[in-house]
Length: 305
Ligand SMILES: O=c1[nH]c(=O)c2[nH]c(=O)[nH]c2[nH]1
Image (cartoon, rainbow, N blue to C red; front, side):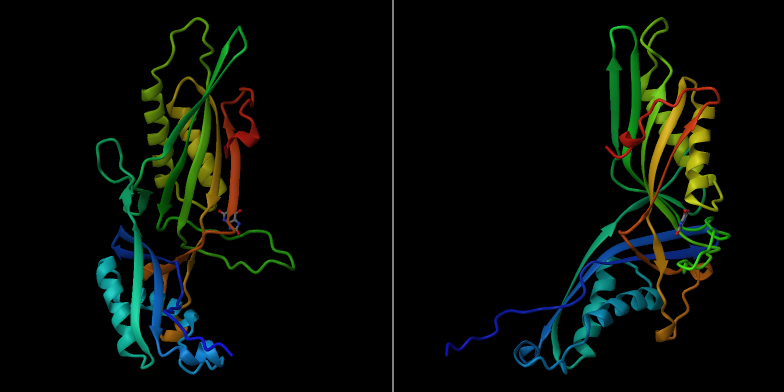
């Protein structure tokens, strides 16, 4: 029989999406990491015989990431990674090597036009959103839709969700202080139709819509993402002449507060909590907001394109 040997091997939990909010009065700070753990050591037996005696479960490595975020905070990706790596190797005899890989996502504060923060808890993810336009001309008039996508925003407080319908399948608990996060995808329709009046200043119009939508997101105390969406649309229509209709598609990017009670840790929102940022499934909230009397002309299926 051919004799085979075990070559390089490692294991652990990959892509732990950990969000830590630190509260300094009404000013919040956010650390948003994607942490992957890979451990190696005396792992001959688990591969050969199935004995798990030397295996620290990947589930434990995940719990450790969230518990350490709460217990020690996250000063920097490097500090956090060093602490985790040392713990796995120094405190677990069969583990001889730990590799911690971390991606960090940067957030800026949502500002007012004079550069002061709109609130202490409203953030926009760094990295440019994508601006877009769709122009249709039928030989008589022009229709201009403008839009944006990939604009990710987050409120670390000022959001609740409760009082919802319940049936025999409902398990969701009411939440009086949650993270509200979404990636805004939107189109808006200009009243200008290419006849008569000169064309709007498209760049200025874009900046105004973006600014007002962001400020409405930041400043709306929210009982649902639906309510926030509508407030954003109303603010845009009230602030921008020449726009009659705006449609949003907004995924509810759920942030679940980690249950750290098995490790003797409280994890209340009021003290600054650690969250697991789930990527799917997600709630998808979509709606059009119209000026009263305006026609609804933006196709519903355009929003996600
Ligand atoms: O803002 C929300 N709207 C919902 O419709 C909903 N449904 C849910 O489970 N969570 C939320 N959050």
